[in-house]
Image (tube, rainbow, N blue to C red; front, side, top):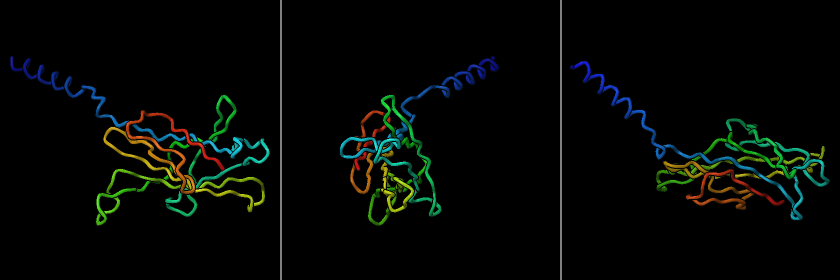
Length: 172
């Protein structure tokens, strides 16, 4: 009789421990699709168009070395618009703090990347920009909250916004 009691008790504990709790999962929302255009609306990432960039490189400002490349792939939509897809790779630092005496203890993070756009073989024609991605971290979500390009806000998202691919358009 005691053998059955222990067997039933083990089965009950096993069932309880296997319970799925979707509320305990944290949503991760950090994909950025970055479009570049000029004031006339021309796609600047399409190297076949006159006046567009022929290439780009991305360097992590907070990287361990002076040259810490970040992989950002070039993609194309069904409408033949090119965009850079950033998934992750740049180091993050804490952005906010709970007090001036204890900096860097908050729940917001940021990454900084220097993007060098190439227009021709002449280095003087290169265009350099600074991309800052700010993240919000809560028990239920880790998400992009704001994107700045050269100090100007180009994207923002409210804390209660649903998880999605974040579309950023930068006008040069």
